[in-house]
Length: 55
Image (cartoon, rainbow, N blue to C red):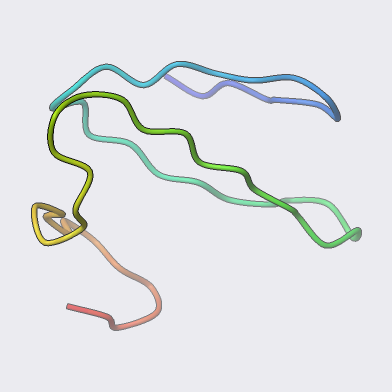
């Protein structure tokens, strides 16, 4: 599934959903991430395929 999000739009990604973000445009992307729940850490991230070699 590919979904194009435009300026001032948002998207909900369910817990456990595999997802990826890419900016096909020429204007720099500014992303605001909002988390909810009792745990908001980042040590639970699982990288499946990372073009930036952060794994």
